[in-house]
Length: 232
Image (cartoon, rainbow, N blue to C red; front, side):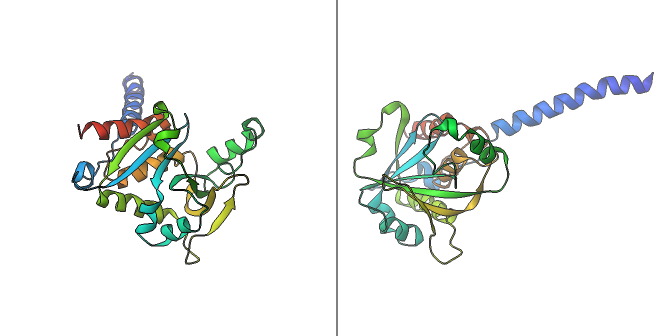
């Protein structure tokens, strides 16, 4: 009888423990750096936009700011076609680049999502027009980084590049536009998706993030909303 009671009590305790652990993981918050965000607000800083298409997020960054800091990322940007703004994103080396109808790519999407260790790329896409004038407000969040915060974010992006050959390695060039895809040293999979990567860049800039919830693009948007609220 005592063993039965132990099993009866132990089962719910295990379930409760698992549920609690999952809840804690889901709400886990990666702290920001107050020296970077909100940080010093004086000075020109760098204007950035977060772009959300409903499932994927990119960062829109002034080209001049990227080129001015020098280094491998700046060299990659200098080799791009004309455009005053650079859209920066990250994703699976095959699925992210392919623009064929999504219905034809579902098996490859499942491969990218569930198979571990997929190679990845960083997209650098030049655009001439200010994203604040071309992207609707509901899918865009604007914010200004201090020079120090921008340097930290750009360094984070640069650290994602595969520099094993000594310089950024061009992996693909998409036909029909100026987007270029450079090999990344990171791997794509369910535990590290495009929005996780963008959230990591925001965290590097000093923002507090929720890494697990950042599987959703809406959470990355909410990250910027919460950060902007601290400056009001």
